Amino acid sequence: MKTEQGNGGLERVRIENEECEAELYLNGATLTAWKPRSQARPVLWTSKQATWIAGKAIRGGVPLCFPWFGPKAGAAQHGWARTSAWSLDQADDRQLVLSLAPRDGLAARYVVRAGAELELEFTAINAGSSVATVEVALHAYFEISDPTAVYISGLEGATYLDRIAGGARARQEGVVTIGGEVDRTFVGHAGTVELWDPGLRRKIIIRKERSNSTVVWNPWIDKARAMADFGDEEYQQMVCIEPANAGEDALLLKPGESHLTRVVIAVEPLT
Ligand code: TA6
Image (cartoon, rainbow, N blue to C red; front, side, top):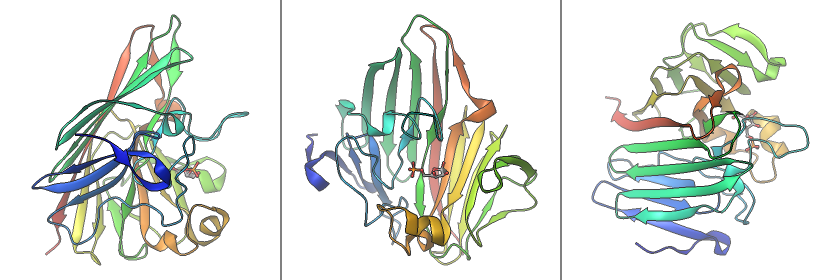
């Protein structure tokens, strides 16, 4: 499978098989599209205002946050993996294997298997000579019908850090609903999460392995307006649900040690 020039002339690889179509940009190894053939609408969402510039994060799909998640003084938010040039090591009509060369003693490997389900395997690697603490988040943007119509189950009773309340700890009461900006990092949460979308008559199931954090984000109106690479009304089309190992769930890697975060995403009809 060859790469081709995609948006902005960036290198892209496409998957087309009997069960789905998908595309991934080597810029950040960003999977920007996945649409099972059973679905009328794509499962992953990408902004129409996204910038397609080498070294810039792509707004949508599954940006890879590594080796840190969130802001960091004097450095780009969410780390440098999502803005780096990755190498495509293997590709066929179902699986892509990519790698990120070591930087500051840290490297990564990423496997994408796209079919009726989507499997993502992110391996954080300590290629250095000292212990490293790293964070990982598969910052997945999901297409939805209407933020006020969807809800997220599987997080009931979980503890979260509420970014819009200055990081205060809170407990999730019931399912997660969206009636304004939501920015929550659920910690110590390893379970499966389900995104219920009556408008699209589907449920997206997000099964995690070796991920102890889950981030949920919708920017709502003001934040949407504040982002140049995000349409003012696009908060109505997406929600981020991010399998992660972040904050107090950060990973401690000894020299030579690696850690694999895995997620399997499936879609079921809501009858
Ligand atoms: O995933 C939630 C979050 O950390 C939000 O706070 C918001 O900053 C979002 O990521 C997007 O970050 P970005 O750097 O891609 O604009």
